[in-house]
Length: 159
Image 1: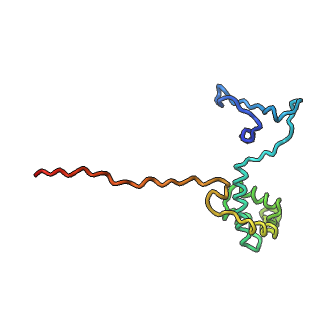
Image 2: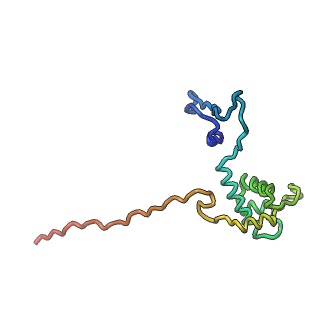
Image 3: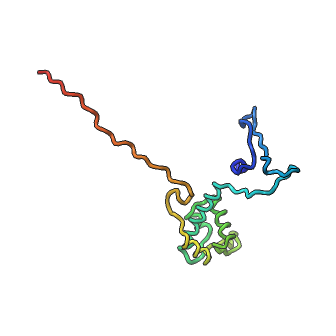
């Protein structure tokens, strides 16, 4: 799916047992000998959006604290999923977060915002609510039309 989304391969077939999917590499990705031209950056855009959102939540939490915080406490505040661990590792690699400890039962990892990460986060605060943090546009809201009073039939008099 990722290769399809990046436009590197074509898919034919319906995907059932009678007609399974057939994937072929696009010709523009091959040289004259049939070898791959280069390895593209295989980044899932949806995963990137989720990881950035989690990174912003983690940084918002760590910027408010001056001492080191355990990963368990971070997961309790941000959410306990696979993205939290990936986002923490990315923040450590990018040197926005400092990590201390060996990462085990006796010596768990402790995290805090680095001075560079703190300055960067405070200079570029993330949006807190809505779709803006995902880069998506908010759907337009259309109010339903106001109900109109139905026309009353004329009263019949029996005089």
